[in-house]
Length: 254
Image 1 (cartoon, rainbow, N blue to C red):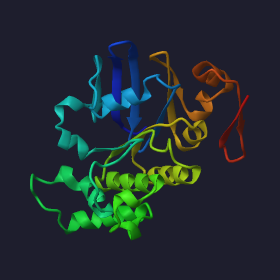
Image 2 (image 1 turned 45 degrees about the horizontal axis):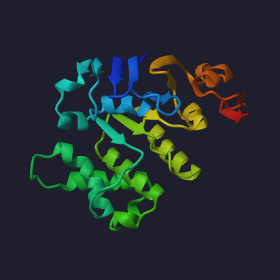
Image 3 (image 1 turned 180 degrees about the vertical axis):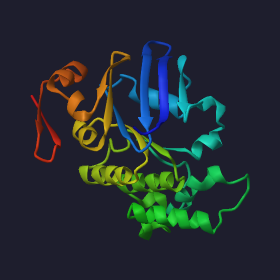
């Protein structure tokens, strides 16, 4: 079994008006694609934000390669973990290539210029997401799906060991959803993702954690966890689950 890359242990978090997480545990192993599911407001995005240090847990610990993430500088963490969120935008207009090059900032000293290696990595990442021909275009002229591929390219340019996907496909059509997830899956690195679409979760993830009422409800492989009984308990909907001859899962809601 591969080594644990990231681990969140006994994580609790409270907003001023209510508790969001209570004693939650998850782990991501090297090369493993892990999904987190649960109804709206169950704390999925909050948990991810604690992991990538936008929020601070009330209690618990997050470790990376066995070391508390608080012991890493933000620049050190950015050399290991990349994040692609649901709403990615810049506050200024710039070219696609300049946006992707930002993925190299964790590797540069203050005021240090980008070098040939940085440009090569950025262009290679754009090619991987099939956006190389857009390198000189203004980011503001792109569609939502195109922008999301650019931000994925920026994440790839960081050469991360782990990518966190915080609802990255939520507002995209099915074509862009599949393209982005296929690219991420092909990298062979650790992935931690939240998504609403159970079909995507089932057919891309190696392992799933399910949150319910602030706590961990269950965890397991997609075929083990995404049963009609669990889906009814976690999401409150009746559902039929069908497995085809290629072991892909499909869901029919009633």
